Image (cartoon, rainbow, N blue to C red; front, side):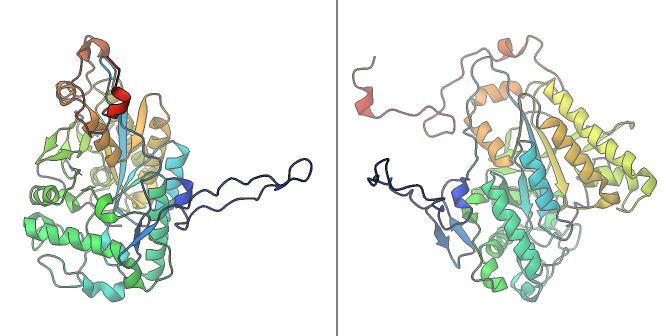
Length: 431
């Protein structure tokens, strides 16, 4: 998959029934007779899952996504949970089978994640002319396209991931970076075109591959897609303007310290963060590519004798960043990765070991960006504002109960976490 090639200037180098999309099976039939041979009345069969195919049947509405926790507003004096987000740029399943592998890792460690799908991974090579990238000729892509098997395997993983409660975002399409038409030079209108095409390749993968009888993806991508990370972390300003107008809820294309998030341009700024590089005097971004650049330069095939050390260094840097938040201000830890085997796959090992060590800890929630955004939306803005005053790694001096002891404002009606409003009939007679 494509790598994030550059940093911003100045940074150091669902319900189980939904699965089949055809309703639940009835299971093993039970006996129809009682003790004396009399037939028992049979319960009415469970209704089949509601499935509404969209467009050419590449996607479908199958109801609410399974396994999404209901966000709850913090109570006065309650310490916030420690959120950790693991996310993947350019997610797709290839011969390395890293998508399927990390789905298993997530399930084994009570984690959900965000997969940023590259739209061209849903478009076969012989249909590449359907992609018209901004400032480039039709059919151009810096990360290529896919083939029928690759698309089929990727669809299988996307379907399973969503039904497990994971989020499907976008990493856009052609992954153009730098000068000469890179995403950093795109206008708001060009970003809208790129987003529209990314959606279209997902919504028409059946027509574009000829797999008319295949199962649909179990979500409406127009509604599922609420956030992204830009290629090479470039073009964030105009992208965010386009994203806001298109109803996105968050962006993760920038660089932050480990502080509580705030909104920027109307979107939650859930950018990756700077964490220590053990044994060195600087911090770097919470991404495999950035650790690699600081270790082996611009090659992903560095000295094999250093692979284990480099992987350990990334893992330990992420763990140090986690621990200072967990013991300190509890700011969410945002981590980005690629399904790549750079430097012998050492960064994949580092991520897997990080997941295993943090996601099973008490008061830790390893979640998708969607789930984090839902939780943030459910909180009292004044409480979030107060938590943003806590420096990196610093817990409240007076303790969390005293720090957040004020009575929070009630959540507005309809906001996640707001208490349900009883019907007028139920309220009668109550005082």
